[in-house]
Image (cartoon, rainbow, N blue to C red; front, side):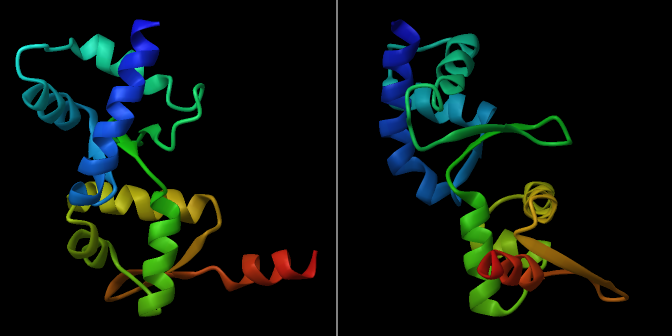
Length: 145
């Protein structure tokens, strides 16, 4: 019960904090800002982690994701956001995502790679670097089925 209630409190807090953080935040950063906001009613890192793992179970709109680098973060709809950027701009690079979402280059790169693995975007690798585009083949296949 304690962790479920804490999960609901976190969701309320994240609803206000995540837009300022680009839609995602690492677990250590969340721990710091959530405890700072709570004042004297601090929680442990273990309680925070356990509460975050309950987001899906109790139907809250946030997800815990472990990136290939080992970084654990909490996010809301990052692939939809990336696809929106790609559609608006035609294509994006990891540096574009850094500017748009105000996240580190490593997190931006991991999010783009994750979006590619799910088929939301595809990449073009050139001398200038990696550029990600909307996956039109997947979009067309969806329309045909």
